[in-house]
Length: 322
Image 1 (cartoon, rainbow, N blue to C red):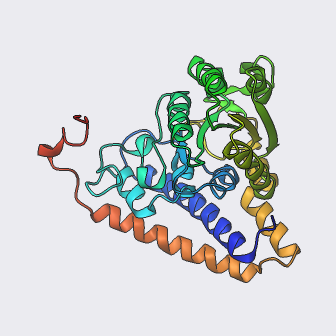
Image 2 (cartoon, helix red, strand yellow; image 1 turned 90 degrees about the vertical axis):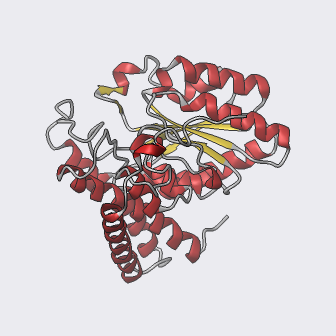
Image 3 (cartoon, rainbow, N blue to C red; image 1 turned 90 degrees about the horizontal axis):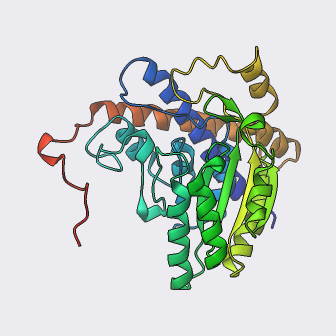
């Protein structure tokens, strides 16, 4: 399927929104305005958007501690996300979730998760429910190369195969599990191969290339919607910031981040591809850049001025009573 001008414009805007959102958070956290632990997604935008552009609001995703990009790509409200990270009462989770626990079930975003590997079992549960409903929905578990070593992920993959659940395990291999290189931490060196050992079909791709990621995910989603059970995708990508905000990154080589920004920036690669092919004009992309900056400026200002949760509401929306 050929992506048309509208598709490409929307994809670029989504990726640029994620990048600007994260770059702005990086700056705002340094001012002390934002409390709590934050993990930024900048550099991996082509994965989130390439995956989610193949999904609908009825499909499910489960994110990780590095989840802002997944939320935006799935259609979560940017203003509501910023207010949530600022801990405001009208944030997406009423200011009680913060950076690592943003969710919006109306968009099929079942939540980010601060526990490494905890999302995969939830995604399988959603996939089993989808299979029972028979409406053709799929569920996506985003995981990193660190989560691929967790027992919860192994058990989830096995259960997905056993139940033929339409669950897609997307492993974003950004080469670092916190501060440990994947070449050391993943014994086989092959994350997709591990998933294949459980009996599911796997794909591999360049997660810095939106077009490759999107094409792979279109095929994977069609495969799972057709009732073939689960699948897994390993996408090679990069993160431009540390594991968390404040990470001194002493485990990275001299000039490593600068080299990656120059050579593997998915936004730069996208711009080059579409302008050289005459699919979009640079001036149009520049206008999107300016629009997104204005949008993020406004969301930060709105979050600063929004009210925090009331003390008397501390136990509301924490537990569900059946």
